[in-house]
Amino acid sequence: MMRAWTVPMLFALCGSAAATELIFKGSPGTAAALLLAFLALAGVNSPLIFPRSIGAREAQRRSAVDGRPVVYWRPGCTYCMRLRIRLGRSARQLHWVNIWHDPAGAAAVRAVNNGNETVPTVVVAGQPHTNPDPQWVREQLSPSA
Image (cartoon, rainbow, N blue to C red; front, side, top):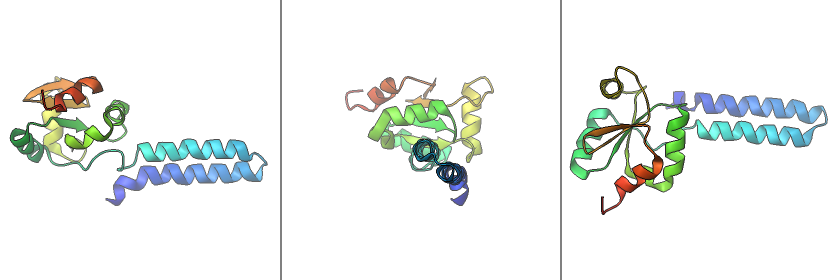
């Protein structure tokens, strides 16, 4: 779990160091803006943004039972972050699989994307959709769908 926090902590520490230097140089406003930017980067890259990942096999099993989509993603992917942020609270209803932590998940993504690990790949009712519109994904979660 500590490894997941390495990049966010580096962003926070680098931002703090740069902001401290700017404060000593007499630019507190610039320092505050820079620190906020680095903290935003730390937050976006933290494990807090994405729901807890599970293995691909477990996600497929759960999806077969409850009918919820499976999202294959990887840390640092801007399209994955866009999907997660635009889904809001609805994102917790999906089954998330981090392909960098699950070889079976990476293999599943390569199988449907011509050998490429293109994410986010969302599987709804057994049908894969590469980088779908977040609004469409949200509609797949509605009770009427």
